[in-house]
Image (cartoon, rainbow, N blue to C red; front, top):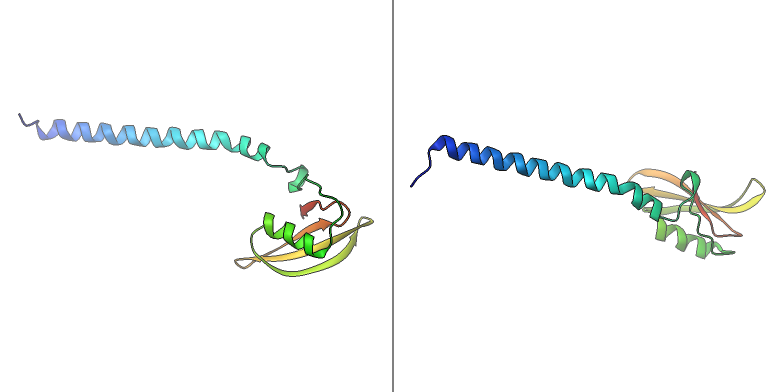
Length: 112
């Protein structure tokens, strides 16, 4: 027996409403879990990577930066900042230029 058109439209509308609600719950669950993902990453205050590997040379500094940050390396320079020797690495990520520092003594990465 064929259902009336109005009944079919109501069922279709109910199904769409359920799909929308399910997507909303899924997104809410994902967003609620994002702070946990941030906590799982080894980062300290102000986006600094807390992992220290010991003294690094220029080549090792480049390897660490390339492994942790997107983009193409534009330049690398040795600088003294706050009494510490660091490598200043400039990167280009799709036209966005940014700088990452690598502490020579510890290998610590920071983006300032």
